[in-house]
Structures are given as C-alpha cells and as structure tokens.
Length: 320
Ligand code: MLT
Ligand code: MN
Ligand code: ZN
Image (cartoon, rainbow, N blue to C red; front, side):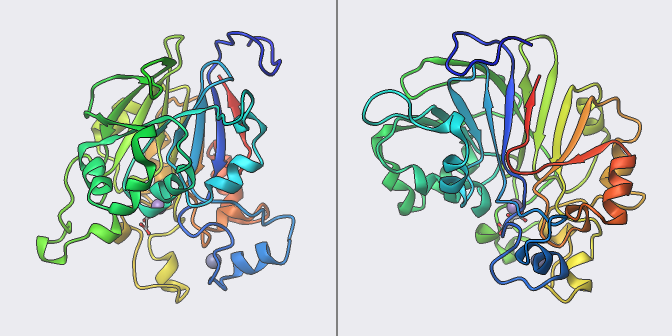
C-alpha cells in the first residue's frame, strides 16, 4: 500500500468506498415499521442506518467511478470528502458511473447529477435503452457520454472526453430479473427478463487480482462459482436472510426469489454457496431493511460473521 495523502500524485491502489449498503428503501425505510426499522429510527447503536445501494471505485484516489447511482447519492456525496469538488468553479471527482441494472435504487441518483457536469454513463444495451426511453433522463443532456457495455467484454473506463481512469471492469450476466417498473406480466414467468438486465462487474485490481460487485443475484449456478473462486474480494447481494422474510413479517407479498434475489440462509443460500470458494473478503451489500444481519447483536449477524462474511456499512472503505 502506498501513501495515503489526499491529492498526492499517482496512487496505484484500488480504493473501494461503500456509499450505500442498503437495498431499495434504505434503512430505515420511510414507511416501514418492522422491528429493524424501528430500532434504526430510535437511534439504537446496534441498528446503524444505511443508505441505498452504491459503491465508488478509484485507482488513483483522485478520480472515481460510481458503481450504481442510488436515490441517496446527493447525501452520499455530501458525507464523502473524496467526492467533493476540488478545482475550479464547477468540479467533481466523479468521472463515470456504471450501472448493474435499471432498478430505481440503481439509477435514480443520475437525476442528482444533472448539472451539466461531464461524466460517462456505462450500462448494458438493455439498460441504456430503458434510460433512453424515459424522457426524465434527458435532463442529463450532452454533458454525459452514454457508453454501452457488452457482456464479457473488458472495458477500460473513460471519462466523458475519453481519458482513462485506470479502472478496468468486465460486465457479466448473472441470474436476475428485469427492473420492476419494466416487468411485462404477459411475457411469462420471467416477466420479459433478458441477458443484460442484471449484471455483475469484475474489477481488475491492476495487480493480477479480481474483485467482484454483484448487488443482485437470483441464483448461484456453477459457472458463477467458478468465476468468483479465488477473488480478492466479492461484494454480493445481501438482500434477505430468508426467502420469505418479508411475507412472514406481513411486509409485502413477494419472496426474495420473486424479486430476483437469492437469500443468505439455508442449503441453497449465499453463505452455503460461498463456503468452498477461496474468496479473500466476502462482503454483503444491498441489504434489505428487514434482514436481521443489519443488527449488530443478532444471531444471524453472528452466523454470517462466523462464516467469514462482513456486512457492509456506509463509509466502509477497502483498499486493495
Ligand atoms: C430490487 O432490488 O429488488 C429492486 O431494487 C426492487 C425495485 O426495483 O424496487
Ligand atoms: Mn435493489
Ligand atoms: Zn423495515
């Protein structure tokens, strides 16, 4: 690891900042009266609030790429000095944003970035088409270069004007679901989902290692296990502990599976799926407010940690 001086020239380490560790709705969610949300709202120190799903990534500590743009982006930037303006009258260290889906919790933050600040917007053709079809995103205007990600093609991230950020990501399809607001009930049991609707990102650490960001994943096929094995770090879908967690608590009609998320617990759960994989750091992100692992004092938290998992929190920083 090199020097940590802010603004110092050319740091080569990969820095990853968790801007928001919660799933859609955040923690606490505005209209949720579940036991977790009540504790968070009451200021219980074992129920730390979390904003919605996003990471920031940098190779030099100076220029950053957002991985997803959450509805809480404005607040996330405000509490992250690395993302504050530095030079000139208008400035942002955020040079790019990469989307892993068209879900509202991953795109609504783009509307916070509508002040003609240049950046690149990376997404698959499916997600770019959804954005292009929605006139509200026209507010981003010509300052934003929309660049299309092809599955399994490594991409050296560029700023709006083509300057390299020193970050290479490779998008890959993961089992998932089309965004809720695009579901077509007439299209069968998968609601019209196609490859590219939900992706994971492989991030090249610049030193021969791999880091993964997979904030939504519906299942764990062998090919995914093979891909993730041996990674330095994996940030993975931590939406629910149990598939029926929300329905059992009377908080909705949908299971985790219906929403495109595998769950942590059980024989076909995430904790079991990762047990045999040699992954350096396993970090749950996109954690739903109903998930008991959010509570520092829950047995589920202890179980996840005993299996080597970390539960992400806002402001968590990983330097690789
Ligand atoms: C999800 O993670 O299931 C989605 O963000 C739900 C949504 O789009 O509201
Ligand atoms: Mn989500
Ligand atoms: Zn809740």
